[in-house]
Length: 278
Image 1 (spheres, rainbow, N blue to C red):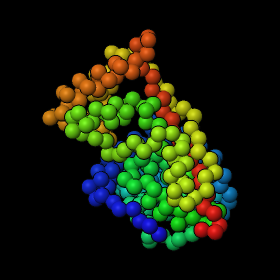
Image 2: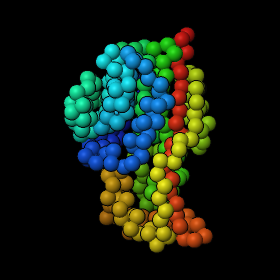
Image 3: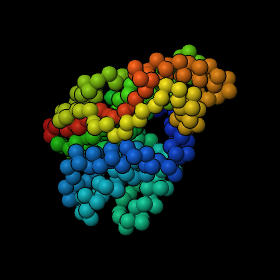
């Protein structure tokens, strides 16, 4: 099973960021809605075996267990101990039997090959340095005709990441991830194909959230954005003033004729199958 190379500093950063976010993760309205879409598309049956990667606070994991029932097996894996603490607490309160593991989702050699009917990875593929190797790695864990469900955010529709990605080179900072390889639905489709999987469906999700901002909101949005651990590097003292100036300028340029900047949160969702001959 091919194993992607990992960057220990990147993993440490992601671990720290998501542990810090663990107490409020899921409060955003789109995360629970996205989890429900995963379960709907997974078409789970009683007794299925499910592996939920980057399981976070258990939004997909818990729903999966409720669908597969006592005869089914569900494992959730995440790199953040804080996220897993929340997931375990919720699982215990619901009286469910779910196994949670703290681990890097790109290095799962300890898991048995060909054991899982469904593998899911919600809101995490963009964080990986080598998404193709990750997909190949996960495919090896599927049973023949098992299915993999993943997503990638359509970043151009989400104001802060899109602007920070653009201005990053001008201030010597970058996001902790790169969505540069995602140009359209075909990008995810090609990723599946290159990994040797059969594409069942790739589609743009519904719009989970819509926010309208006034053009004069730019400075406040920058200030709020850089308090988020995902984007805090743009608020560091040596770059903050320049980053804010560039952010506000770009924000103004995105305004429509009535001075409104619209943000839409949506994803490319992908479902692929491992053929029985693999």
